[in-house]
Length: 196
Image 1 (tube, rainbow, N blue to C red):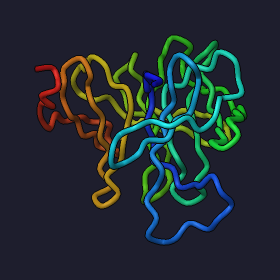
Image 2 (tube, one colour):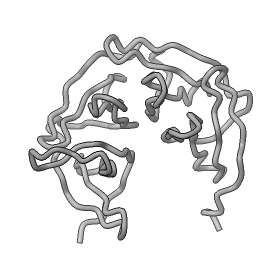
Image 3 (cartoon, rainbow, N blue to C red):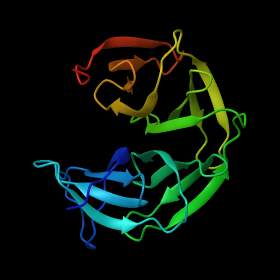
Image 4 (spheres, rainbow, N blue to C red):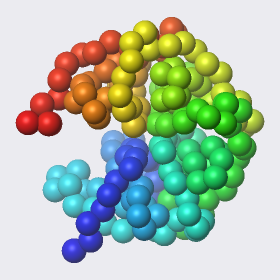
Protein backbone atom coordinates (compact mmCIF):
# COMPACT_ATOMS: atom_id res chain seq x y z
CA UNK A 1 0.00 0.00 0.00
CA UNK A 2 1.36 3.43 -0.95
CA UNK A 3 1.25 6.25 1.59
CA UNK A 4 0.80 9.58 -0.14
CA UNK A 5 1.80 12.96 1.29
CA UNK A 6 -0.57 15.19 -0.62
CA UNK A 7 0.50 18.79 -1.09
CA UNK A 8 -2.34 19.94 -3.26
CA UNK A 9 -5.81 18.73 -4.13
CA UNK A 10 -7.91 19.86 -7.06
CA UNK A 11 -11.12 18.82 -8.78
CA UNK A 12 -10.39 18.28 -12.48
CA UNK A 13 -12.78 17.57 -15.35
CA UNK A 14 -10.99 14.89 -17.36
CA UNK A 15 -11.07 11.20 -18.06
CA UNK A 16 -8.33 8.71 -18.85
CA UNK A 17 -10.29 7.09 -21.67
CA UNK A 18 -11.12 9.19 -24.74
CA UNK A 19 -14.84 9.37 -23.94
CA UNK A 20 -17.10 12.36 -23.56
CA UNK A 21 -17.86 13.57 -20.04
CA UNK A 22 -21.57 13.68 -19.37
CA UNK A 23 -23.16 16.85 -18.03
CA UNK A 24 -23.81 15.02 -14.75
CA UNK A 25 -20.22 13.83 -14.33
CA UNK A 26 -18.41 14.92 -11.21
CA UNK A 27 -14.90 16.35 -11.49
CA UNK A 28 -12.14 13.91 -10.68
CA UNK A 29 -10.25 14.66 -7.44
CA UNK A 30 -6.53 14.86 -8.20
CA UNK A 31 -3.69 15.31 -5.72
CA UNK A 32 0.03 15.91 -6.12
CA UNK A 33 2.29 13.75 -3.96
CA UNK A 34 5.14 15.63 -2.26
CA UNK A 35 7.99 13.09 -2.20
CA UNK A 36 7.49 11.04 -5.39
CA UNK A 37 6.10 13.76 -7.70
CA UNK A 38 3.10 11.63 -8.63
CA UNK A 39 -0.43 12.62 -9.48
CA UNK A 40 -3.04 10.50 -7.75
CA UNK A 41 -6.81 10.25 -8.13
CA UNK A 42 -9.02 9.97 -5.05
CA UNK A 43 -12.09 7.78 -4.80
CA UNK A 44 -14.88 10.05 -3.50
CA UNK A 45 -16.53 7.22 -1.55
CA UNK A 46 -13.50 5.63 0.13
CA UNK A 47 -10.74 8.25 -0.04
CA UNK A 48 -8.41 5.69 -1.60
CA UNK A 49 -5.63 7.21 -3.71
CA UNK A 50 -4.73 5.59 -7.03
CA UNK A 51 -1.63 6.40 -9.09
CA UNK A 52 -2.44 8.37 -12.27
CA UNK A 53 0.87 9.58 -13.66
CA UNK A 54 4.44 10.49 -12.81
CA UNK A 55 5.20 14.19 -13.23
CA UNK A 56 7.76 14.42 -16.02
CA UNK A 57 9.98 17.02 -14.44
CA UNK A 58 12.73 16.35 -11.93
CA UNK A 59 12.53 18.16 -8.61
CA UNK A 60 9.19 19.81 -9.11
CA UNK A 61 7.85 21.48 -5.97
CA UNK A 62 4.15 22.11 -6.49
CA UNK A 63 2.60 24.64 -4.10
CA UNK A 64 -0.86 24.56 -5.61
CA UNK A 65 -2.98 23.32 -8.49
CA UNK A 66 -6.20 24.57 -10.08
CA UNK A 67 -8.29 23.46 -13.01
CA UNK A 68 -9.55 26.22 -15.33
CA UNK A 69 -13.35 26.27 -15.01
CA UNK A 70 -14.08 26.35 -18.75
CA UNK A 71 -11.07 24.81 -20.52
CA UNK A 72 -10.24 22.22 -17.84
CA UNK A 73 -6.50 22.97 -18.20
CA UNK A 74 -4.66 22.04 -15.01
CA UNK A 75 -2.38 24.82 -13.75
CA UNK A 76 0.25 24.48 -11.03
CA UNK A 77 2.70 26.60 -9.05
CA UNK A 78 6.24 25.23 -9.10
CA UNK A 79 8.77 26.55 -6.62
CA UNK A 80 11.81 24.36 -7.17
CA UNK A 81 14.30 27.15 -7.94
CA UNK A 82 12.10 30.08 -8.88
CA UNK A 83 8.35 30.48 -8.72
CA UNK A 84 6.82 29.52 -12.05
CA UNK A 85 3.34 28.97 -13.38
CA UNK A 86 3.04 25.63 -15.18
CA UNK A 87 0.41 23.52 -16.88
CA UNK A 88 0.17 19.83 -16.13
CA UNK A 89 -1.20 17.09 -18.37
CA UNK A 90 -2.70 14.70 -15.80
CA UNK A 91 -2.75 11.77 -18.22
CA UNK A 92 0.90 11.90 -19.31
CA UNK A 93 2.37 13.82 -16.37
CA UNK A 94 4.05 16.32 -18.68
CA UNK A 95 4.73 19.73 -17.14
CA UNK A 96 5.01 22.86 -19.31
CA UNK A 97 6.35 26.14 -17.98
CA UNK A 98 4.11 29.10 -18.79
CA UNK A 99 6.09 31.91 -17.14
CA UNK A 100 8.05 32.95 -14.08
CA UNK A 101 5.93 34.81 -11.55
CA UNK A 102 6.52 38.55 -11.30
CA UNK A 103 6.36 38.56 -7.47
CA UNK A 104 9.35 39.60 -5.33
CA UNK A 105 12.00 36.86 -5.06
CA UNK A 106 11.59 36.75 -1.28
CA UNK A 107 7.85 36.09 -1.51
CA UNK A 108 6.32 32.62 -1.36
CA UNK A 109 3.21 32.30 -3.51
CA UNK A 110 1.08 29.27 -2.64
CA UNK A 111 -2.33 27.83 -3.41
CA UNK A 112 -4.34 28.32 -6.58
CA UNK A 113 -8.05 28.71 -7.28
CA UNK A 114 -9.97 29.95 -10.29
CA UNK A 115 -13.04 32.09 -9.76
CA UNK A 116 -15.99 30.26 -11.31
CA UNK A 117 -17.53 33.61 -12.32
CA UNK A 118 -14.75 35.36 -14.25
CA UNK A 119 -11.98 32.70 -14.43
CA UNK A 120 -9.49 34.90 -12.50
CA UNK A 121 -6.67 32.80 -11.01
CA UNK A 122 -6.12 33.65 -7.33
CA UNK A 123 -3.24 32.78 -5.03
CA UNK A 124 -1.73 33.82 -1.70
CA UNK A 125 1.55 35.56 -0.92
CA UNK A 126 2.22 33.92 2.45
CA UNK A 127 5.29 36.08 3.05
CA UNK A 128 3.35 39.36 2.81
CA UNK A 129 -0.05 37.93 3.93
CA UNK A 130 -1.81 39.21 0.80
CA UNK A 131 -4.26 37.90 -1.77
CA UNK A 132 -2.95 38.03 -5.33
CA UNK A 133 -4.15 37.21 -8.83
CA UNK A 134 -1.95 35.62 -11.48
CA UNK A 135 -2.13 36.23 -15.22
CA UNK A 136 -2.27 32.76 -16.81
CA UNK A 137 -0.37 33.89 -19.93
CA UNK A 138 2.40 36.13 -18.55
CA UNK A 139 2.74 35.04 -14.90
CA UNK A 140 2.22 38.65 -13.81
CA UNK A 141 1.21 38.82 -10.14
CA UNK A 142 -1.23 41.54 -9.09
CA UNK A 143 -1.49 42.29 -5.39
CA UNK A 144 -5.13 42.73 -4.39
CA UNK A 145 -4.85 43.47 -0.68
CA UNK A 146 -3.70 42.40 2.76
CA UNK A 147 -5.59 39.89 4.89
CA UNK A 148 -5.90 42.48 7.67
CA UNK A 149 -4.59 40.06 10.27
CA UNK A 150 -1.66 37.69 10.53
CA UNK A 151 -2.15 34.05 9.68
CA UNK A 152 0.39 31.32 10.28
CA UNK A 153 0.17 28.88 7.39
CA UNK A 154 -2.19 29.06 4.43
CA UNK A 155 -1.58 26.20 2.03
CA UNK A 156 -4.29 26.09 -0.61
CA UNK A 157 -7.45 27.82 -1.81
CA UNK A 158 -10.92 26.75 -2.91
CA UNK A 159 -13.98 28.52 -4.30
CA UNK A 160 -17.59 27.82 -3.44
CA UNK A 161 -19.09 27.91 -6.93
CA UNK A 162 -22.57 28.76 -5.67
CA UNK A 163 -21.55 31.85 -3.68
CA UNK A 164 -18.24 32.74 -5.40
CA UNK A 165 -16.65 32.72 -1.94
CA UNK A 166 -12.91 32.06 -1.67
CA UNK A 167 -11.75 29.88 1.24
CA UNK A 168 -8.47 28.81 2.77
CA UNK A 169 -7.35 26.97 5.88
CA UNK A 170 -4.76 28.18 8.36
CA UNK A 171 -3.07 24.88 9.14
CA UNK A 172 -1.21 26.14 12.22
CA UNK A 173 -4.24 27.79 13.84
CA UNK A 174 -6.66 25.07 12.65
CA UNK A 175 -9.14 27.63 11.24
CA UNK A 176 -11.33 27.91 8.17
CA UNK A 177 -11.03 31.38 6.62
CA UNK A 178 -12.94 33.26 3.91
CA UNK A 179 -11.12 35.83 1.79
CA UNK A 180 -12.75 38.82 0.09
CA UNK A 181 -11.62 38.70 -3.57
CA UNK A 182 -12.04 42.48 -3.97
CA UNK A 183 -10.04 43.65 -0.93
CA UNK A 184 -8.05 40.63 0.25
CA UNK A 185 -9.54 40.95 3.74
CA UNK A 186 -9.69 37.59 5.50
CA UNK A 187 -12.26 36.55 8.10
CA UNK A 188 -12.04 33.56 10.41
CA UNK A 189 -15.16 31.43 10.06
CA UNK A 190 -14.32 28.98 12.82
CA UNK A 191 -12.06 26.29 14.21
CA UNK A 192 -11.83 23.03 12.29
CA UNK A 193 -11.34 20.85 15.33
CA UNK A 194 -8.68 18.74 13.63
CA UNK A 195 -5.94 19.47 16.19
CA UNK A 196 -7.79 17.72 19.01
